[in-house]
Image 1 (cartoon, rainbow, N blue to C red):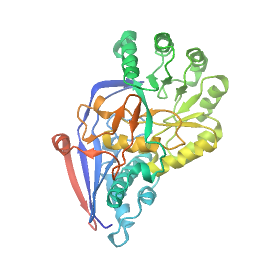
Image 2 (tube, rainbow, N blue to C red; image 1 turned 180 degrees about the horizontal axis):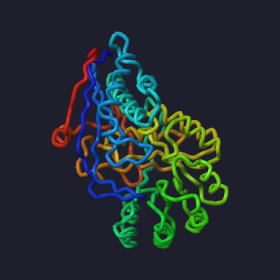
Image 3 (tube, rainbow, N blue to C red; image 1 turned 180 degrees about the vertical axis):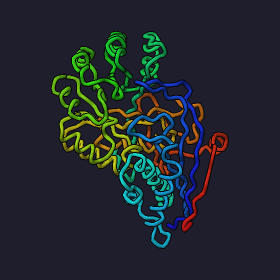
Image 4 (spheres, helix red, strand yellow; image 1 turned 90 degrees about the vertical axis):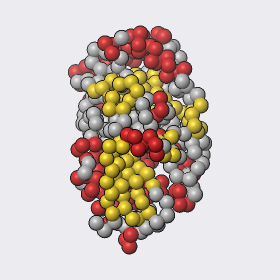
Length: 377
């Protein structure tokens, strides 16, 4: 399969309702897409960068066009005789110094090449990844409500559970931890709940965090700063609630370091951050070998990125429900149709490609820029 060009597109999307986590309110969703043009089938990829990203994740503005063009140049350099390299090697070719920004771009280019490969071979992503079961459990996320209103929180958790979510992540922050969790637990005694702090607590808050054991949480996610594995380990040793890491896990090497340090017993793995499908599977395998449970996290993807995440989540290494809800529920406009979802599961596609189909009319309305980088240019 010969490469002809890569198109770089930005679409201005938004969330139906702003979602607040510690220190950040997610509302705008400017999204970067790639389309790899070949002499056979084209392939689409979605980058995880977004406008209000927090460290270590990049914003769209931080990576486009400089980081993007470097990655495309590396892809072209690895396309000997204009023949695209295998998708499994794309991320390794496109990452330079190994920054998360480079990894997010490399993962998106890997996705696009993989889509083209699979379409040309009339093969599905689930089949390629060896997913045995086509039904994958779905979890959901509930943000911090305006004015810390407990009634609004209870309604949001109830709606997520009524929609079939098999696990609900409740966002917390300093001053908003015991009250929301005790209220939700009292109202939903049997629900599988996680608390997600997005690194907002200082290590000195460990005593108060240990009190969260009272709420029967599936895990406490990222209480401390991403760089601080030692404080996470110390908290893990003093709590019965499992500690999960998310922002701390920015590369395969970092996942291995965190596991070796005993900093977590649950890992939130995000393909967009780690550098694509194959890097994420390698990270999940490392976690499985160490007895660390995994789930696939999300970045409010369109149907394209989320379909890829769902297929990855179907792998046996992922034992916990991932962030796999239908993007039509949270995006005001979704340029890619998502997979079929019923109750608490999403059904993986057996169609050729990544499983998401382009809604060209939606993309045309919301696209704000497009540029083409030709092979050899």
